[in-house]
Length: 98
Image (cartoon, rainbow, N blue to C red):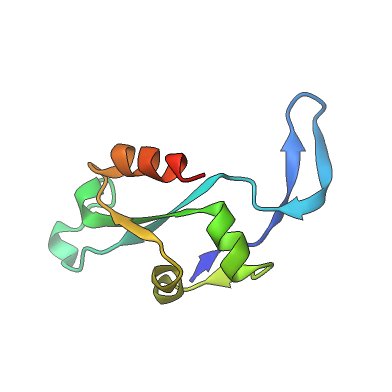
């Protein structure tokens, strides 16, 4: 499960938290450690991770004020799979859809 709870934003200029809860990012990147062999496990090796991108707009539409979400639910609402090496291009593509 991934935490997606809306939060209070913080203004670095005034050092004050907002009063309205919202998701603070434009795009969420969900990370899943997929490597299964303990002998070769290395969390710093980004090839051993899967990444899933989803614009916050879609998360807000489909999940509302929900506090957490499963990977299967993310996939159902349109999260895009990415490897680390593909991330830059897929983030740019995702941003063009905002």
